[in-house]
Image (tube, rainbow, N blue to C red; front, side, top):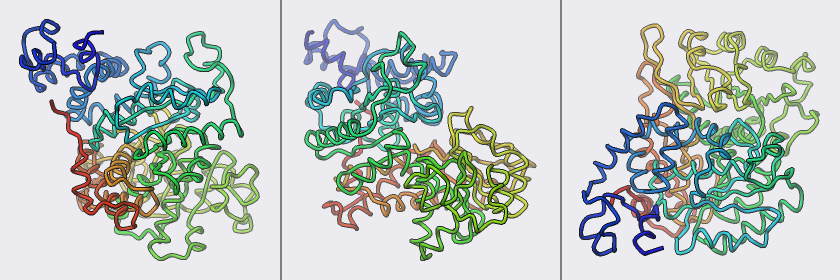
Length: 539
């Protein structure tokens, strides 16, 4: 391939028709492009018009991926300008559909690394093959066992890593040449994929146990060797592996698990935002988490830690939590409890009707929660009866149906407002348009991790922090509170997606400052560190 073609086929260097005449002569591009030189603004106008011509959301995403693969700068210039419109397309919820159709729509590797648990000897060379000559500072890795609400999607789930990194750049300004998406193929237990002749991954059931964790250890060791200044972000690992990996490495390397920590931070920020509106205290709340997997337990832990930080005795703080899973309310003698669930279970002796608390409705009637958060992926489970029962015992019920994509949400925001006569303080896991109810316009906060993790990761990377701990995560959550006017009728509990770039910087500075204050970074000035590393989409 000639030098000219190498440039035009390199998405980090390609500017397409924006190459000036002088650049074309200098780089040997004369004759390889149409004669007219366009500005990035003109390119964006043309590209956006083509985007709008696509008739379905999946086709819009397919088109954007073509732009992404050809010209990173134009892609992020376009996305930042239309971030509210494009976030659901490049990330959640359309990314779920893209993953489900990955085999049929496979375009090109998108600079991702594909690793097989069967071949740990290939880890280092595979990483070098993709990242040669690049200063990698951020890695998103997934084994795709629990993708969003759609489950195990094997190697097809690599798009979740690509999508996460897009948001890191669009929201926080991470240099796209310094990121690396990685798929760990441990096999899949999705029988549909195993029987699909077009499936692109390893065709066997998931490898588990010591062989799997030995691979993870070797992978982490190699990443630390090749990219010592990088943040290793784990994404959509299974319930049985995510917490174990995080527990092992959280204080040893710079790492982050968005499903556990990111969900916990955004839920905490949403609850604090809701209480800012209702003028109530965190210490007076009863928390019901419906769905006690990685996300649900991450939320419980973040809320618990916040109660303790505010001065509550840990034993007393745990009394404020109720976990509901498929078995109903989780008790200390419930079979199959995970290590993360055990500290938050209840004793049967606390309830006269303990044996009847086998479903959400019964639990709500028994405990009268003030905060109900859904991460169950069980659509429609926050029913009118349950919501009205909850609202009968608290003036401003805080209700967060966070499961996504849209088809898996526990309730619709409009119904929650209707069933509570506009009193509910709502956040959803999916984007929701403003809702008119009884003469008031309600802004619905989107408790999407994308509102928080870009700033968390960028703040840690910018200061070259040695780790991300709960104090830094709490600083991130608190930094979002106050960005919304709580006295405005119908105010949202979280700031809007359209302001992501602004508040991601706020989050990044808060995290950076926390890292400096705790001695996890040698940086002196959090704001300067963040500004120095911020990348902008311009030629």
